[in-house]
Image (cartoon, rainbow, N blue to C red; front, side, top):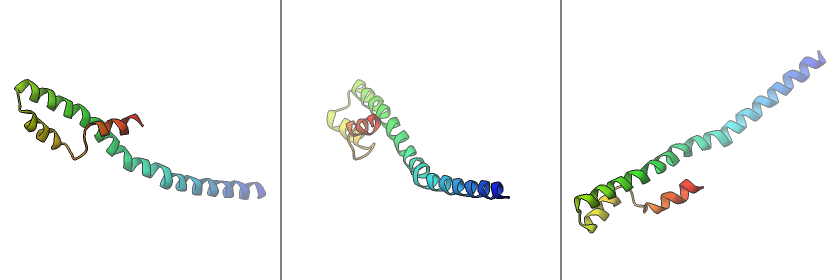
Length: 84
């Protein structure tokens, strides 16, 4: 019986560590993942929108206003997050 008791206690401790790791590490990463994915998607969208507007001959101020509709942060700030 001694071996069974040790096995059960080891399994219980391993379960507690697993639950703790999931709550501390994996759930926090799962919350950040959609933000990082969206930030990676925004830069090509902004680039495509800018190129199409330049080809159409849109005035620079109108282009700036159109690109600002993607958010308040400038596009180069996304590069810092992607590079990390």
